[in-house]
Length: 109
Image (cartoon, rainbow, N blue to C red; front, side, top):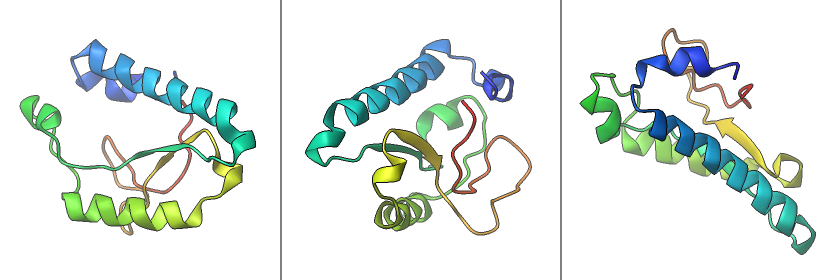
């Protein structure tokens, strides 16, 4: 709920609801399968997408930058991050003004 006002510019409630559902699904898998050695995380890759462009929201990162940041993060995370959501980390984007900051942190959903 903390970040809800920031995303009011996205006019499709179903899109935002699907993101919340994906977060809960990740947590459920994390809890269900952690004893078997699985670790589940979810990340915001910051990629340019058709849905963002369709509503005039300027895309942040090219696919290569987002993919590189995801791969770097995956190699750093361990069991203690199981079931958590993270932003990717991209140098120079940690405190950027606007909709997204790519600081590598766990945002307060």
